Image 1 (cartoon, rainbow, N blue to C red):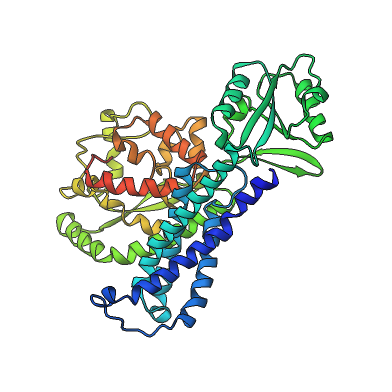
Image 2: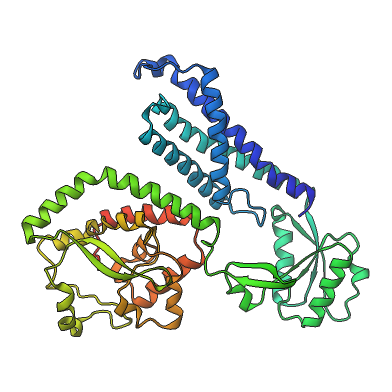
Length: 457
């Protein structure tokens, strides 16, 4: 990465901090404006000299959250939608952290107005700051400032497409100085004024690729290459050394590392808040089930989770007593012959209120306790029964690489109307391409789907 590119990438961190502090100061100023005080009288004493240190520390904590959601990664430039999405997730995670602190210590801070308005202003100002940096970067690139000058090696369709792409979109930060064929290539002749060499043809012979790589290393040039089909299908590739030997590792999921920590933190905070807020609804549903079909109101079902570990999944009871024992008699009516799962539209085991609970997914609310226990996540692949998992094909076992979820990509993409093959493909995509933003989108879609009252399994 060139110094100009590195400067523009790292500029986001101090710029974000300034935007966060500006949002906090603006929210503070708005709180004491006359038109706000007229409807919301000020009942606290918070001088600016006491507020400012808290604001500066809080802004630093939010930068840590921004880093955890990948806003300061230097590995590649995010798309605009991805960047704004991660800004939203980072700001919302910061708000959730403050809400939790409020819950345990109400006297910690005196104004909910400043917190909520500050969150909205932070989201707006940080987004504007990010857009400004992107605009400046694109403007500099169009003028040829800070761009990487590439020598494209290859005479195939991929190489020609890359050359045209960099010509049409200078905002990518690359310019193809020239494209050469690999046969009889004289690198000394073609690398003048070049910053990096890009091997565009993934089918180039190994000896040619190694010769170009050695040349780039010896002459301090950057080296890139278009991945072959195997690498294109291998997600989450990282490299390291083992006893001095370079090793390429294909991680099971991007959740390995800080992603796992961040996802777990969000799960704990959200599950704890939801359990407290929804406790009256739990009591009401428990009474309805008890009067409808008796005790117990919650059942513990055996499921298979991460790394094929078995756990007890909690659900509000929507079936008659001994429903699991009756399943064997109903296998002939299974409507999902495409895979190992069982589905029956008019399942006679479902109680009078059970259909309502299942359509609205209210029967799954006790799984928030599974989330707190660390057996499940808010979002993830659907947890299946041991007998169903035993019938998995080999590639289906990738679904066990992470914790199962209360909701997931498959559930919001068709609910029970999907075939098992389609469901497995969606869940596999989620496992291989996890992001906190994708989790947020799935949770929002889950709310929409539930209100649409689609048929649930």
